[in-house]
Image (cartoon, rainbow, N blue to C red; front, side):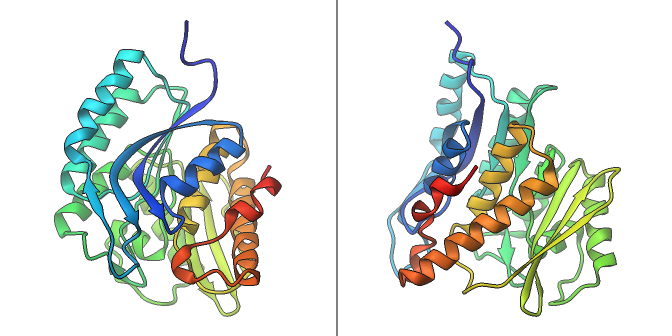
Length: 275
């Protein structure tokens, strides 16, 4: 009996029990879009690191034997999606995973979770940044924010760039491998824009009104929608538009319910509208 009769995505990310981020938000979103989600945890946290204290269990040493069991089952994936990676060794394990499970038919989606607001996250070393540049070469779809696009292209960060400069960064990233790139979180006054690039196609700049403040997990939800839609054959720019609208809806509902910013977005309230 085959284990591969339904569309599947391998989701490589951490598992966080409270705070609505990473696997905890991506899994239900991917499931809602009728794709089976198969998580590969990189670590387990009680709650995300935005809280004053948290329990943390590094899963690096367990990842390779975990993957070995998937190989025994002969699992095949229509999509492979990676998120936050906590060390140089984890990035190398994911590189090997890509090599082992990549086929001509499936797609790899890399969310290079490295930093924001012009700075790398405190866990990210220069060596990890160099390893992530190598990982980008395996991606079919890449979803960096502005800071991450700058890091990956060695572009000095500024709060404002011209659209031609986003175009140049997207082209530089595409030269590394990815055919589809969306640079997210471009602030334009009262709007947030996404620069949507597809090799050989006209780029799209998709804007929406800013609502509330940035919350944990929104990037994970965004990439989960992009990944599931890619497996389902949804055109890339339509998927980016869908993801942006859904996140806006999540933030609006979170504001209505006065959800603390640390607790992420109450996507559960509007998940039924995602199609």
